[in-house]
Image (cartoon, rainbow, N blue to C red):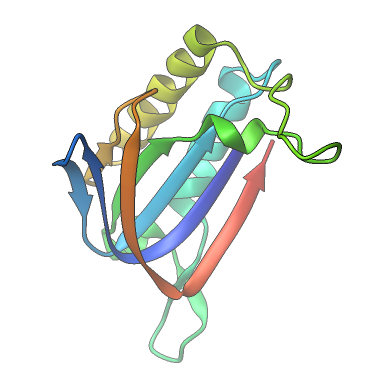
Amino acid sequence: MKLILQRVACASVYVDGEKIANINRGILVLFGVEKGDGEDQTSFLADKTLNLRIFPDDSGKMNFSCVDIGGDILVVSQFTLAGDCSRGRRPGFDRAADPDTARTLYEYYVESLNRSGLKVTTGRFAADMKVQSVNDGPVTFLLER
């Protein structure tokens, strides 16, 4: 499982020209599932997403989590994170989980985040989405499990 976490000032998702989700200060999560991933990895990464200290305190140090600041979270499914670009010129997706498994774990991750009480919104699974964001910092992390 691979996640890209971006600390954002704001972010939104559009499908067919319609805005379907938006957040203010918080985290944009690009969520990718690989073969063999399960609920254990998903739970671990949900906790890490909520509690990773990536927001600055008054002295500019990263001492606050999304929970600490009451931030928003936008989760966007991103199967291309499972892409393998090591050979040739076209990415291979042999490592990507099948769509049913990926959807189940994506929904489980979102449900886990929702239990925090924070505002959690999503893109549309398997849709062609346009994602806009204002990366704050920029601060971006790759989480793998």
